[in-house]
Length: 115
Length: 109
Image (cartoon, rainbow over all chains, first blue to last red; front, side, top):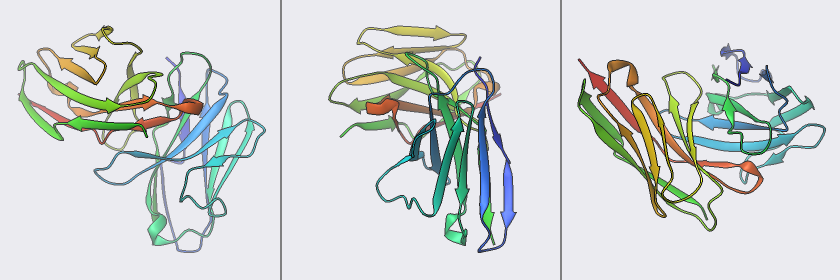
């Protein structure tokens, strides 16, 4: 089946650090990639949608200057959490969608802990 | 606005004890209803997509069904390895997904 790779799986860093998370579709071209955030015992909340070569579209309430998304190719999207603070600590998950009736395929998430 | 409600929040079954998980939804035009499985600390794993009322899909011990208002995920003779959180999601414009809060399933020996 379709494989989406997300790195790193876990990050622990000091407040004020910027953190980059990579999402790669390994065996298909991803027309669109999505970034989600998940708090403990809660469901996935969509943060933003990115299409290759275009600016990302952010959901209401998500700060685009805090969560910088780059979708440079059909197989790679990155999320940079700028100047992260403890309240940014969460589980970040990416997904990739190819075309037509294909479902979104998800990476294994990144656990971000800001001290 | 698309809405997805899953029940129960948590379910504990004995191995072999069949049951069903519910996903109720409201949507202006159904583009697809998805079921995913999520293990702790992992991303969701795709299980099924359903598009129209009356549609059914099966995979091993799992069977998903769809009506105009709800979807069921039936688990037949579950095993401990079926323990996970099962998520239901609606497809909206731009291929966005709206997720329910999930049912946490625990299957015990």
